Image (cartoon, rainbow, N blue to C red; front, side, top):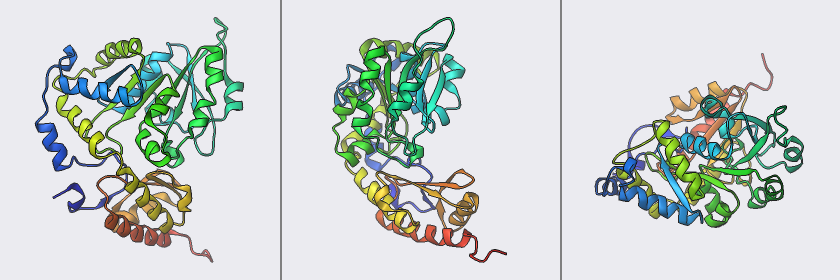
Length: 349
């Protein structure tokens, strides 16, 4: 039995809810391991070297979570009391519980873009040079691709590259939060190495989209990654025989990247059923603007489909490895009915 054959609700809350396939479990069980804190786990080393090579980076560091990878990446570029600029709905600003400020004393200022992209004039206007001891200095810019809260939008490579003159002129860092960069690669056809060349530091996730149970990586120059390894330990992220987890990531890279196209197709199917133009859905995330998100979530749950409310009027659907085409079609029907049943009547009351 595969994960998609398992009984239970159709879970569209996130692509983090997947279960390892039988083949992935076998790879994990067979993994050669050692103590990674000592740098002696051969499977972790193989994963780090492979992912660094895919993106054309000098080094990579395996971390237990994407949030930790982003913490380490931003910390590599920004010191306490300095700032990073990012889009207002970026994951590092909205969904990492203020960790960058809480742990590292990093502040943020944001620009707004309706689709999570780069607003170069706004960023240039926001940039703050180092005028110590009077003002907080800008030391990095962060771009998220794909952009989660913008509905899985692929930020075009040209938009990221448009930041290069500013970054080079002021000698600041450029971070790409590539938690779902694999989706961007499959949807756009942009080579992974091109994304790597577009930024100084990159983070990627193995447990979103690719179906691994745990793990992300931070990639960049070797000096930065060596320092990130020290900070990973300080934050409690040093792992011992982590090869059993790294093996899942290696298996995912071999078997689960190109199939992301199926998730993108399933997302467009859901979008059309929910009244969203499927042409606007680039990857595996569909965001719905509804009158009552809680009511839609409850109605869908009662009919066997799990979705997320991101606010009072926002519902998110995410397709993934454990949702087959047949399940996507069932979910589409359920969601269409849930939306109709929770929509206010035309005449009011």
